Length: 162
Image (cartoon, rainbow, N blue to C red):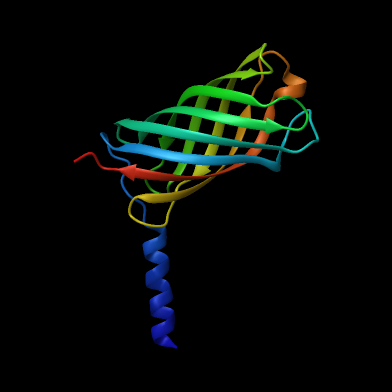
């Protein structure tokens, strides 16, 4: 019994240990949004997929670029491109993010959506994370129909360039 408890404790320590978010590291990640875990003016099914790339230009501060695709049963599908940043709290892996996206949909609809998020980088290995987060995107054109609060589930890979 003591061996099992010791092994479980050691396993938990390795799973919660976080890597350093050091200057010069690069990031690659993907995330899934929607699945009716978000709220906006539509009550119909929606799902989104984002790909992200980042660079730590300072310790704990990452610049991000992203592209995405959003499918909605309420409106037409949309493509997104955006830029943003994250600040990581080195003690625990919690991150705060801000971004701004350009949305293009339906051939003639364009919108700018600034947003914020708070999440957690849960390291499953030295470089790979699972990143749940809560986000808010503010629509400039139509706040009541397209602004969104939701849950995002992502994964990331943190690569040391050396």
